[in-house]
Length: 153
Image (cartoon, rainbow, N blue to C red):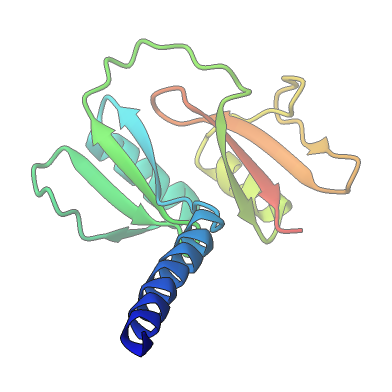
């Protein structure tokens, strides 16, 4: 009888631990790993993202000259992938957003690099001021993907 109770206790313990482990894993939210952007000219897009956003390249495991990987710090990674036809039109609602310490300094950088930008409504060289005080601008990458930059608030 003692052996049956002991065996039952061990089985109960194993089942209880598995159930608890499943609940812990099942309740964890997913985290962003990477964002992939399909580009027509990998070299041009790599230079653009590297220079405009000061992104740092990280090792690219495929080593096939069709990918560039950037770190986005704790947010994950940005992967540029060669192969797009470059003829798509993208909607502004589908955009990547980066935060910077100063939107005014960033706008100076855009102007110095002859990169046109606009506010949300589409006013050229406009800066949107959201109701929460965040300033934001919108512009396109070399393939026409919309990008938002806002101040770091």
